[in-house]
Image (cartoon, rainbow, N blue to C red; front, side):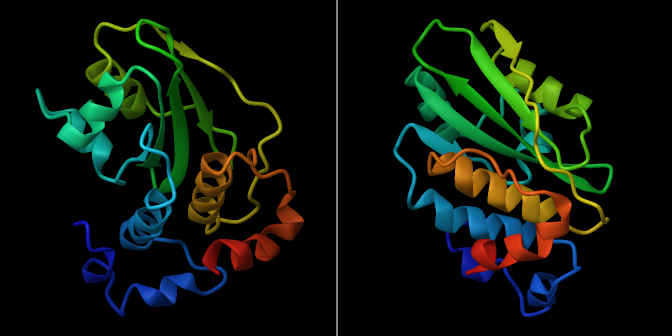
Length: 178
């Protein structure tokens, strides 16, 4: 919903402790806060956008309105195989190739469901992957959501993606959650 506070329960808040993995409710609440800071040609999708779009003719109106401008940046969180990652989809102007980059804190490729999402949302556009080098890696099974929050926060504010190594992951939590 647009009111993120109604989606986060007190039982979700323990996920903010160090070493805990973040769930959809926590990520979506954080994204709702970030959306308020974005220009109109940028969007952060809900964590449930990929399964939603894979049904025929279901691109949400807000997402379609951004795409119709031709010049946009979309941040797409992806939860696949118990792991969070995200992709950034960019178009500079109508008719341009839609370019996307996948950011994963364990170095995995974009999941197949994201690739199907791209084809469903951009059925007539040329689509090209822009690989990323040097994205930091997590060393535990809990910090992937933290990397997604931090990555989207930094990229959406024009600061670039995180560049710290795993041994500093605990230091990353404070700026994200403050």
